[in-house]
Amino acid sequence: MMNRMWTAGLLVCLPGALSAQTLAEVCSSVGQLDSGSYVTYELEGASPTGQQISEMRFALVGQETGGSASGFWYEFRAMAEEAIIVQMLVPGFPFDPADIQSMVLKSGDQPAMKVPSQMLGLVRSQIEQNDMAGFGKQCAESEVLGTETVSVPAGQFSCLHIRTKMGTGEVWISQDVPFGMVKARTDTGEEMVLTEYGYDAVSSITETPVELPLPGLSGAGAAN
Image (tube, rainbow, N blue to C red; front, top):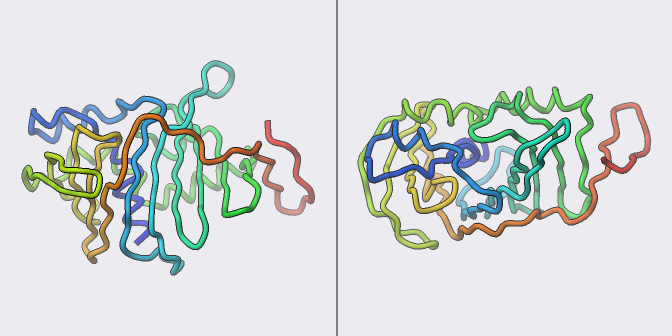
């Protein structure tokens, strides 16, 4: 379920003009997001590890300019038995795993950890195994099922209803919310619905990350 909901949510960045009512025009506006944009979803279902995921949040929580790395800090946060937070520095949206320039991880009360550059390649390859990474590119090839008015806890929205090319399920998208997604439903019945959205997101990680120790080495130093 986590794979499928991640697929539906992480790269459905579609704030395009639904008034055009064509999928190509909606998908062409992928990536028109400002720092601070966020969406929160309520979920029904469980991850492959058996953890019950009750809430997911996607946000742009900062921007880097200049230097060797620049782009947006994209944050994914899932609430299960404990909060799981992944932050990635990416140049824009949609992005390929190879575009990830830096990554920070935090689980529950554990310290936030910066993934060292020596391990970033391995992490990118693991993300590539998740079909969510391809949605942005495949958006225009999704099947349009129609236009509908959808009511969710965050409000009522006029949506374009599509079926993803990957065949993982159906998505309802609207120009009126960041990242575009109002609702998603997998073929096995799991569902996520929009509960909140806005434009003032800040990082869920408040401490300075420490370097994730490399295998075979002890200790951790402060991340740059």
